[in-house]
Length: 240
Image (cartoon, rainbow, N blue to C red; front, top):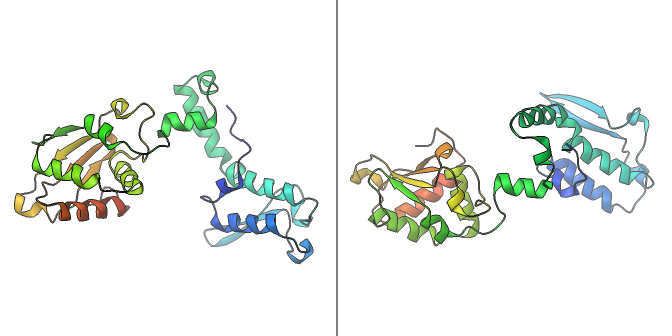
């Protein structure tokens, strides 16, 4: 399996918005490239120290021109997506090969492999999620708080549903073949908070078990407010 593939320009955006915007500007630039004073280098900040990395041997002395700007763009993308993290990628691949035979991995395209590992890029089917949901701590599908939960989640837009799934399972996409293949199954557990405190408490999650720990809310407004706060807080184990 190759570590490096030809990738679209937009793939660099999550790594560096600064370079992404600059590359878009360079791609659409119609003026004199000498005015840009670009060379075949990238500059990174390493703990407050500016470090210059040459994209090609002697790149600091090679100016970017209209004739070589396409190569410059490709080299910048290659640096951010491949060279910069090559050691980490190679270490990851060595570990992966210990678990999965390389010929099995090569049977898939990168997009197919991503779908197998990260789920299907499709809308979350709440009926499927509910049909395959488990309950613990005293909850059942007919418990008033659970009925409120599904009622509220049914009003969520697609992005909010993805945030909820990410919060509870660490993955925002549904499994390729549906939630019956989620292992462990998605589970909602009743917390031990007294009823008089439940409405003021936040839900939490144990993503390693696909477990949502839900207080026994008494009304939809508090459930919606606390649930959305929790899934959008970006917190980890400290959330309570």
